[in-house]
Amino acid sequence: MAQPLKRVDAYTRADTLRGSIGPYRAWWDVVHYAITVRPDHGSKTIQGSNTILIRAVHDGQRMQIDLQQPLVVDSIKAYVAAPGAEGGRGGGLVPFTRDGNVIWADLPGTIGAGSEFAVHIYYHGKPREARNPPWDGGWIWARTPDGRPWMTVACQGLGASAWYPCKDTQSDEPDSAALLIVVPDSLTGVGNGRLHGTTPNGDGTTTWHWKVANPINNYNLVPYIGPYTHIGRRYKGADGPLDLDYWVLPSHLAKALEQFNQVPPMLACFEDWFGPYPFYTDGYKLVEAPHLGMEHQSGIAYGNGYMNGYLGTDLSGSGWGLKWDYIIVHESAHEWFGNNITTADIADMWVHEAFANYAEALYTECLFGAGAGADYVTGLRKNVLNDIPVQGRYGVNQEGSRDMYYKGSNMLHTIRHIMDDDSLFKGMLREMNRRFRHGIVTGAQIEAFISTYSGHDFSKVFDQYLRSTQVPVLQWGVRKGRLYVRFTQCLEDFAMPTSIIVNGETRTVPIGTRWSSPAGGLRARTATLEPDRNWYVGVQAVRGRELKQAIGASLPHHPD
Image (cartoon, rainbow, N blue to C red; front, side, top):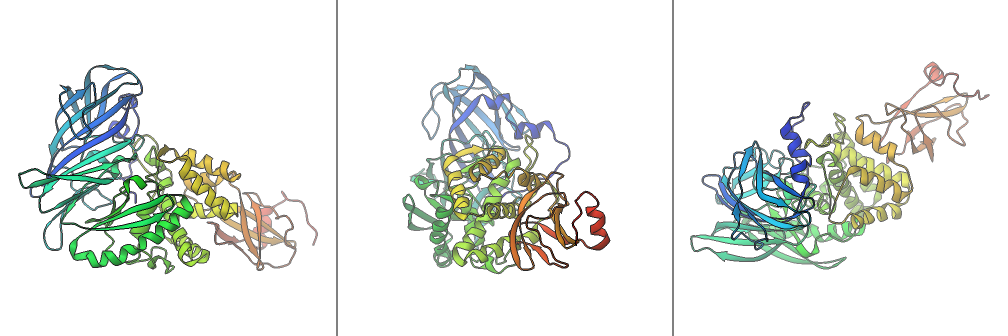
């Protein structure tokens, strides 16, 4: 579930520093984050540290470290040899300066390419408070229905540097991570990955130790703190037994036990379509949160009120969206698209959201058949705005339109039906998750992969639906007893094979922006035509003088 950023017409140096890989980010690669955080609910402040294990890919000395104001860096230490995974020891102090939301840290000497080292950063302060989570994110200071503290973070879009110092870009994931959450003894600290124990601190607090064994997006690393109770289950999956862990408020235990029964059949459907769940070593987890939900890897935030649909509504209007829980299905789909496959720049967030949104239709299809899945995805078209292109602007931390969900999924549905081979389409989705497993990609890579794997050149389709705000309109008419078709309200060179229904007969024909008469074209005085609903296009009949003028003299004369 993407957090929409404020759209801007002019970009600043700060936008470029955040959204691009400048020279002081490019020379080093994150290997491991070890984050410790101690929140105080009363003052809405945090204290923490992050030890970043780093591999130098080029020679370098100055580092760009991101930490959003008003959080304050207390000190930075550097280590020639990395300290333990859960904290620092020794090390020399590193001078640093603040530049807005960036910290410039100057290491004591040049680090040679291939070297590994670590920096340990202590920080504190009052992090940005979420205004409308998960969309307008930050730290969330809430209370349970019975008044106890309930805290977490939602920071996609806003950035993980809103609560801990890091290299705040999707293009560099740590290979693994540790999250140490210091909470009052009466509360539980839940993190991503596996619980590796708890440590009583003797001061009324306990540290909960969580470790992630796989690469992880920085915005996916989050703590959940509250009076949780635990439910443990196991799923017999494609790669063996998968641990299912649910952390919920005690008063919602009965509801959770019933609602989360949806997880195993959903995982079975997704493993069939996309391949094995990508994070068996870290397990699968749903954690009740004081906001709607977010795809936090191996620790999905759940706040849909234990009801089906999207807060009890069907986004498609088809009725099928009330047959399953939107947050369980959509956010779990991100484990494959967004967490397993991650885009380097958020301008390509359609790769995350279009596929996750289409996964909702595929799950509907798994439960109720292909017709139901088509009902669902085509019903989503009413939500498309066509305000700005789906693909955003690169290098300035700006995604495109929220149409990346509904327009994006309908583009994929159209591509699937152009391919006209579900075994090929499924094979493509599975191979995509295998080939790019735990990887960073560009949108261009995914576009090229789909075209190459399928054997269809979809470049014009991607240009039309991702980089234009127009939905093609199929114009048609009968002239001198022959059917003519073309696309309008589209890019000048747009073309794609399209299934059309003519007088009740379905045929697939190539259609471009010039009037043409399909091969074996209809010869009749009258006709009815509609595009197959599985193609995301509009339709317009053109008749009489308007059709004659539109066709003009560019086509050969056909006798009656």
